[in-house]
Length: 185
Image 1: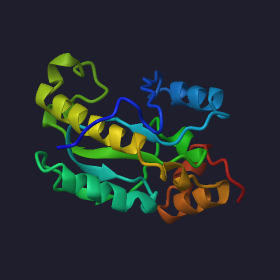
Image 2: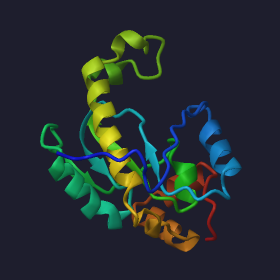
Image 3: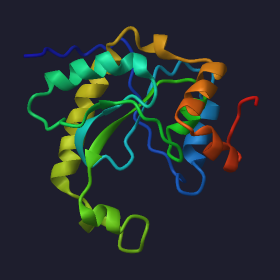
């Protein structure tokens, strides 16, 4: 049984962003306004559904951390394991541009959640309460473990390393097409 302390090594801020679909307005503004603050990591909870694993988003040095976490959560179906595949066009990107480690859950979504995504039928009756509860439970444990992982800030990358990471996963062309590539060519 794990004992939880009321004190964490890192503080945890829960932030909800507005305007993702309109150009990541909220997350861009937040990252800009807090650029001088020591943000240790960002966890993006966009479309998680029932958790099936963890995504290190290209920050491969955290794979062992997430493998250990996955192996400790026996009560959940984390059969997708740990992947490290970054993607764009979500609220984590302004943080990745700053070299901040970014993580997410991988998961399963019901057909209705995908079918009605961003349509007039995308309303609360499509929310699967069980999936939402499972995601909340897994991310709560993940947050606690990350908040006490003293090596977390060692994963920060500089601009050159981030440009290489985006190129490795062929995201540089997409970011250039979207006029969001912030690195030298």
